[in-house]
Each structure stands twice: as structure tokens, then as C-alpha cells.
Length: 330
Image: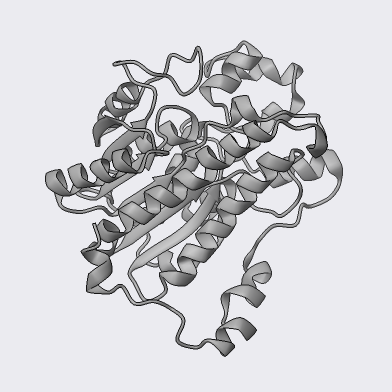
């Protein structure tokens, strides 16, 4: 494989300001891609996380530093007109889109951990749905015409966990499991196209906010293990970034359509490491702590759902074609 297998490919990382989005943008750049980095936190003003210093311009500079071409665009993905303008600009500047990564979130400050669902703030929950689900739908909906014109397209949905176990907060659980289902549903409807939709999860990620929470940085992060033993199995945001880059470079990625994958499993499959040379494997840590292996949404899980089932048998012609009307819809 070339050192830059994504040379000439055009990517959009929606929600690229920090965390997984920044790591993904940088590693797509490392693979040679042209990466549009969007978010609400900009040097020109605005912040999606109060008090955080990261900006989309910082991310774009890092992408370029890693060997790609980073382009920062301030955009609020809850506003359809802003998202439409974004894709119009991509079409105008490059005439194509090969990779769309939906990592828009903005729900950290809305998640009320340790409270039962009947005691949760309903308005915070509604806003979490808008930021964490509806933005993904808007972005994919408006981006699909460009993706359909590519020789091979990828939509990667970022979630938390590749299982259907409960995520300890009703709204948070609904958002993160819905993202997995969103990838599944889009993949079903994209079966007659060259666009692959799937979902990806990182593990315990050493994001900027998490490092700050524990009072460490990437150079001395190991000092936080005393405060949280699970931190020993953590990974940088670049690990899931290399996972997305590997998927985007895989000509057989269509075989993974509709499923959810973890950074650690993809690392073993594609043979990449985290930027520090390690290869964290979260399930081994969980098993060492709990004594049990966590069930995941693997190929066995999907076998009863991906292949045509009873509903598809009732409606055998339901899968839509990418019609000229759709391609010209925008």
C-alpha cells in the first residue's frame, strides 16, 4: 500500500474541532487526503464547548502538517443552509467528495450522568438529539449527491461502543445506538450505489478534554492511571483516525456496509498502530477487570438482519436507485 493511499481523495470531517474528529482529520491527511474540517469553534469566534481553546483552523493546520491539505470551514450542522453552502463550496473547489465522516456531537455538557430518566432535563435531551443525530442526517442527506458521483464513496458514522448494551444514561444511549442504526439504514438504501455507510467507535480516548480532566498531557498521561486504572487501556484520537483512513483506502470496504466496527479490531485487521506505536485492545482490558467478554454487534449479530429477511421479501423492489433526479436535487 502506498504511504499516502488517499492521495487526491476529498474528505469532509464534520465535527473536526477536537477529539475523535480532529484525530480522524489528521490521519486522513497523513494518508494524503484533502480534508475539509468543519465545526462551530473558530478563531473568528464561537465555541461548541465553553472554555475549550481548540479551533477548526488549528485542526486544518495539523492536517496539512501531517501531509494532507487541511481546509477549515466554520459551520453549524444544525442549520441546513450552512451545510448546503458547505457542499456547494466543495463541489466548486474540487468537484467531488469521496469520504464523509459524521462526528458531530456537542452533547457532553448535556449528559446528566447518575440520574434516572424521569429526573432528566427533557430540553437537554431534545438538544442532544438535535446535535447528535439530526445533524448527521442533515449532513448525509445534503452530501449524498456528491458522494454518489465518486467512483467510491464512504460515509463513516462515529459512535460510542459497538454493542447494544446500555450506556448508563437514557438520552446518551439513544443517541449513540441510533448512530449505529443510522449507518445500517443508510447502507440498506445505498445497496445499489458505490457508497458504503458504516459506523465506527473509538475506545477510551485520550481527547484534549479527558487529558485536562485528569490533569495530564499526552507526554505524561500514564500518571493518570493511578486515578483511573482503565486509563491504562486508553488510546489517542489518532487511533480511530487511522481506522477511518484504513477503511477509506480499502477497495473492499463495501463488504463492511451497514455494520459497526471498533478501532482496536480494525487495527488488528489492517495492521496499523496508534501514533505512539502501541495497539490498545479494549476488550482484553474489560475481560481482565470483569472476567467476561462483552458481546458485540459482529457479523453473527448482523447475519439475521443484513441479508434479506421477511420485510424485504414482502417488498422485493424497495431498494431505491440513485436516479438522476436525486443527483440533481441540490
